[in-house]
Amino acid sequence: MNIELRFFASVREALKVAQESVTVPATVKTVGDVRAFLRERGGVWAEALADSRPLRMAYNQEMTSADTAIEEGSEVAFFPPVTGG
Image (tube, rainbow, N blue to C red; front, side):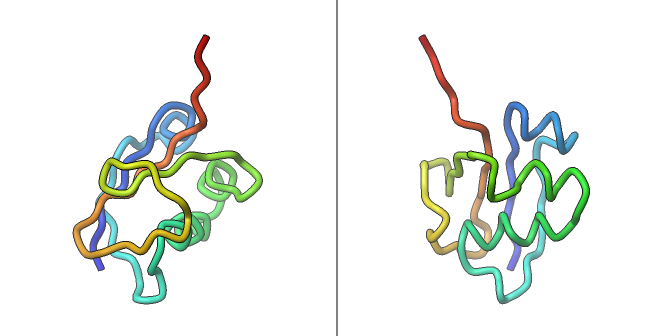
């Protein structure tokens, strides 16, 4: 399945990439699976997308949880929590 990835703020800075088209294996079925799949790249990918890091995720430009199912051609985005004040 082909999906589009977007990375924002400190995640983008750590990975040195803002967007990417990727083909994921059939075992990747949710947004959380995408995160785990990308961590398998190791190095900065494993660090930036680690489970211990609080990250927000979006699916097709809507905030979502890790258990949201993905579909062909969809967009998954990762970014750190944002605070304001």
